[in-house]
Length: 313
Image (cartoon, rainbow, N blue to C red):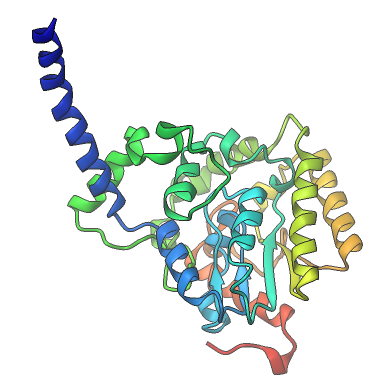
């Protein structure tokens, strides 16, 4: 029996050691979650404009063009409960925060939360790198270890070995990887990407609508209690996307948005079908390219701020 146990230990120990080393190495790979957390820890007291939300604002709002006191705290598939958690995390540090921007997209009100969606693996990034308390310590493998998702861990190791040091966002938190030169023209031209995106974002279950509305209400309450201006925006999309959206879901999206707007006296800017944006302004049917993000941010700034308050880069 002792010989068997010794053999098991000798077999398992190298695997455990290798796993620990890989975990340590993977965590060294630059990523936007770690960068944004460290930035906010150092500069949350000076930030004046904070952008939250999902990939639509992560890739769509170039906060560097809004002045050096604006920061993009959005990320891919970031749901409302995470927005609330991140906004509250630095509550005691805000000294100059004046404006919070949150996107209202076609799928926003109908989201089941990041933890219940196809990209739930991203939850661990908030737990590991952003000290987010939404996810239990009991789920060691699910939320506390990078190597619990082999596919993404291997991708990060590959990035490290290729010496790719970019963390996926610029110094102001804007996602800088959706460049026009990387655009997939085949999927763009044949409409397959747009069809897939519409299908992915159309919800068959509206069970989470009121919960999401309550979460957004808590964000609005947070801002109102601190005299922070909360602004809702709907970012531009291409016609192949917005013309094929489910009309019932679109109607519900606007109903809830206007309800929240009226309840809290919020500003809402809707650019969904804005004709000022052309095909090169888009990376895909519902995300702006780097060129489009620059154009959109300038338009947004003009709408948000009166001339004397308009920030200069």
